[in-house]
Length: 124
Image (cartoon, rainbow, N blue to C red; front, side, top):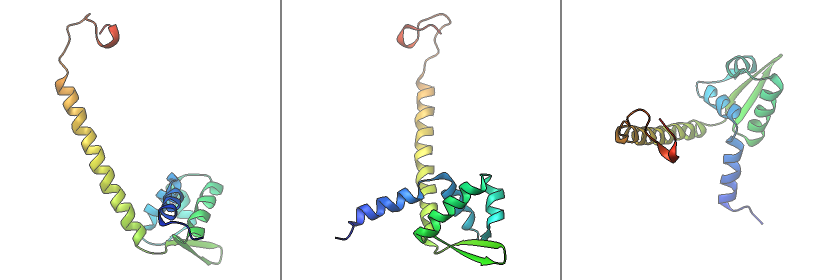
């Protein structure tokens, strides 16, 4: 029985759900990079980077090419870069909305005279 599309999408997002994988994909948006460059930019243990690259490779999101002892990774298609840009846009909107709310909260707070009770009976 085939997997429902919503489950396949959930699995795809779970696969992306690791900070190192996201950072690798962000770096690969600018073009192919050898592992040594990824390692220097991400600053994780080589074994951790290797595990995360393996997940991305198995999923088909990235491809690897070996030339001698150098392994170069690149994105398999540009759609993932578009997805990362969409995520950036969504997060920007969410954060700016939170910033506006924070500003409203700060301007709505009336300064209390020193020594008066604040929330939950505490003193200022």
